[in-house]
Image 1 (cartoon, rainbow, N blue to C red):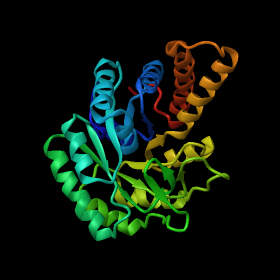
Image 2 (image 1 turned 90 degrees about the vertical axis):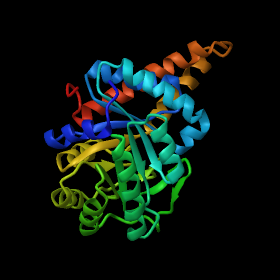
Image 3 (image 1 turned 120 degrees about the horizontal axis):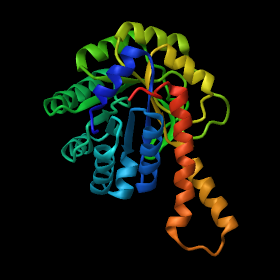
Image 4 (image 1 turned 60 degrees about the vertical axis):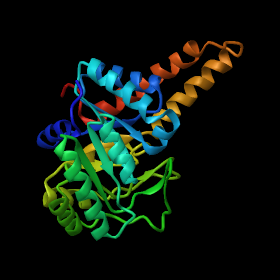
Length: 283
């Protein structure tokens, strides 16, 4: 069932759980995520970064994701992750994405609000939901690079203004996570999550969640996080499974046999995340 991000996240917001948003780059990743969602009866978000769209092509990614969503026995949203380019955001809407993220966090708040509101007005007119971002999340994800010194936590009062003036359906906040592989254990600002949730009363999004201890994720969910982004952990599972298979079968050249174990490994990772997020049985 292809649905908007709003439909999925409103229920998570109302009932106190989080939905996994998993980055997609090829068919096997999409299949692994959908199989995990159906096995656990979890709603799920398939999201593509601008880098992923550049790699596979927006037409391929959109077609694969929409076919998977329409065939799925659980609610599925197809989402653009970190849309920093306005034209790319609009293109995704035209290609049938049911949800988009407009990331204006690199701009001063006035410019971020203006850009986000413009996207909200356009997207809502065709029943597409919108995620905004306030604060700068550190680390590297595809083309998004934010130095640790430039990363800034989301200000709760600015969050209220941002939500009121843009009309976003969900808000990505910077509270101590980062994109990519962590060098140490991330320390989340739980008090900030709680305050922002109380002040804005909308679904909150946690980016850079691969590698965050499960106890921290569970606490973040209990305080108001409703969408949790996972990419690096899926990539790691994919790469390790391919390495293991080729080490044991060095002469095998069948892509199906090479990628099949990787798909199974990613499925297990996604299922584990869904249990931690509390989305199991919510479909």
